[in-house]
Length: 361
Image 1 (cartoon, rainbow, N blue to C red):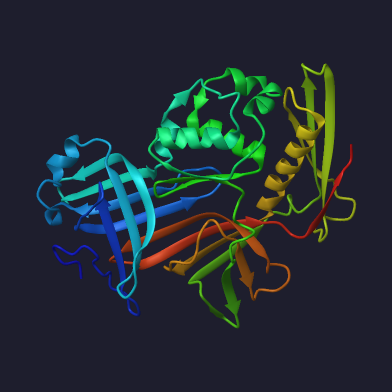
Image 2: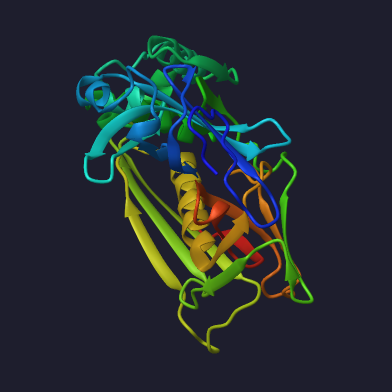
């Protein structure tokens, strides 16, 4: 049961006793009824939602406080009563909902990428490298930079992309653009900004097993697009004003295990992007082909909560046969703790079947 004054209250489960920890501006706070944290990929913020019992909150943190507070930092951790709770998010409170009938306060928000997302800038730091820019913007927003050093000056990228150089954008969009140019991942964890190669291929994969009806998942569903299972052709065209040349690159993804009928047409995707070099056209075509075909197979699963599953490691499905068993790229992991459900996780991941690629021209 939830006891007044508990900081790590156990949520009852028939087998385990999950525990959760809430901090407000660094101070542990009791009164949590329910929490939900979603960790995302693709340069998106992690998000949270926490429901508080107004009657269990300490003096000074009741409804009157939430009616006028600003810039609150919310920390949420989850685990089990016999182990240290795993930090799930340190975030900025965005919205407060007070229900005076049920005497609950619901706080929702984003991780600490939020200040970067909310801040627009016309600065482009032309003479700095991408990693130097990441360090500068991280420190500007009170974040600790965890940055892999890069060598290319940002101005080199802008010279082929006039739109990026001239338009105002958010600090987060600028970092996302630079991460894409470097082939890096970008995310915020706690108070640390990560600008580095993706750890997906180096972190140990999370095993999702379905063997003889036994599984570590409570529910498992897989879907597959026969449209995307066809060959995919991506065409990128660009007129480079500086070089006074046009470029066209065609990149084909040939599915090794085709489901289309014999003679079925490939799916064609065309993109027109100004001021690219041929190498940049090729890199964009490869990236778009990977993005498109990765949606061919989508996995969703419900699992008991644990501290192992992460969006920064692949998910290895085992036990359903060669057509489905493979590595999947996580899209999102949502963790929930409540009286009704105990500690649960929802996973969404995706990938495509084995394939070959070829540059046509």
